[in-house]
Amino acid sequence: MYQRVDLADSYAVTLPPGTPHDPELLAHCIFDRPAPWMTVLLDVRDFAVRRFGLKTARALRNDAAGGERIGFFKIFFRGADEIVLGEDDRHLDFRLSVLLQLAAQPGQDTTLILSTVVHCHNRLGHVYLAVIAPFHRLLARAVLRRAANAGWPRAGQQGNAHPFTPL
Image 1 (tube, rainbow, N blue to C red):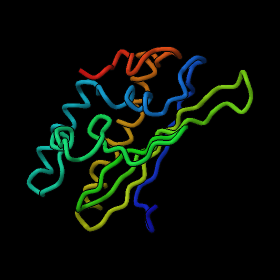
Image 2 (cartoon, helix red, strand yellow):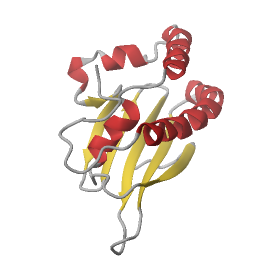
Image 3 (cartoon, rainbow, N blue to C red):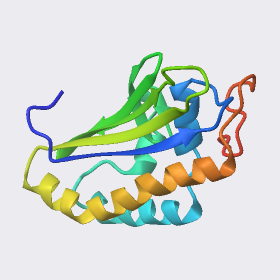
């Protein structure tokens, strides 16, 4: 995908039996309704980057011409066991993958893997990444924990039937 990667990480969580194997539904569960403290962090980020001409989360969320989105992330790819989200900006591009590693045999667990890859374009991208990387790691773990604590959707639920269903 990128010739050079400036950040790459992955976090995994075991899904309980009966969780649908629909990466898009699970991505909605993870990203559609962030905790209030996460929203505050994004607002601080938006305030700080606006003067540099970078895209803000609020602007992305409201960008109807930007294509389909989950949360404020653009959908780049949909597959049977993976959905890839992300954004391209003048300082960096990033992709988030929500991948299901299905059980090899009946009775084994299914794992959801959340991976991030970032490619910086310039010095601004590298400085930005150095500042946000610790927050990114905190947020990546927190969104998985929050979705798991809320309870993953169960097979047979319709659409986004989940405690974090979008408003």
